[in-house]
Image (cartoon, rainbow, N blue to C red):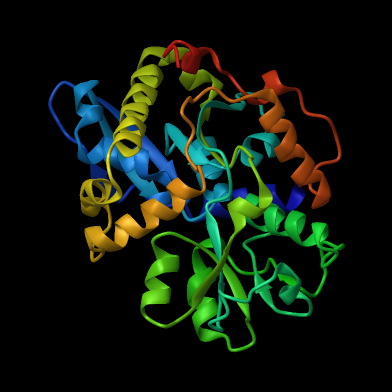
Length: 331
């Protein structure tokens, strides 16, 4: 937790203004949204933006790619963002704040990353192959790294937070470039569309789904300060309604149609390439059909955090999650 809070403080000092603006219109309510990374993993959100579902709700979304839950948390703490799309671990780490951050809607229900190898070994890969290898997994205390620790512990490969197999020294948004440039790195975890893009360019090979191996966990959720939710309950409800309409579009259309809807959010990526990523996430049963978070789901996350040595106390569900707004949607 201390390491996470240090990272939050560092992010506060290095905070940058929101730079990507999406959705516009007169007489609308503006929401400053900070996302943990930019990935097809969050397809329902981008479909909602590109198909005008936020505008239908009278909302304008200003979007920033923060590059990590610590940075999203810092944006919420500093007041430079209204809503954060981030791992709930950030809420847990900061739950003692006076104006605490709360989860008010869940988006994904498993890890969205894929294990990428420098070798073309998809046909033969076994998790035991990670033994003794250099694996980039994200920063310490973040769900990407903790999920990998959880998987590797299950195979008897990793039993210490400072072990030699898993590397948590590389910032989340730098993992792809370090994987490419550092010959000592054997594996990394990447989200889509980066994983497919690297494979298409021959820079790496997708060998396994981290989310499929780790099982269900509340991986990313929409979060905001308690004060914001109290003052803007109707706005938060409209926000979730637009996202869920985006989810319905993803669910009820073929992957190429979804890829075309996503294309404006991913410069340089074809609808066909995006469709491949959509298929991967659909196959993994990635997205939640309701934004209401279950207590049992949060308990699974806490189990993963304890396994990583990042949680040493019980956390009350109601201190972390406010389902009242999501429940209003009746899903």
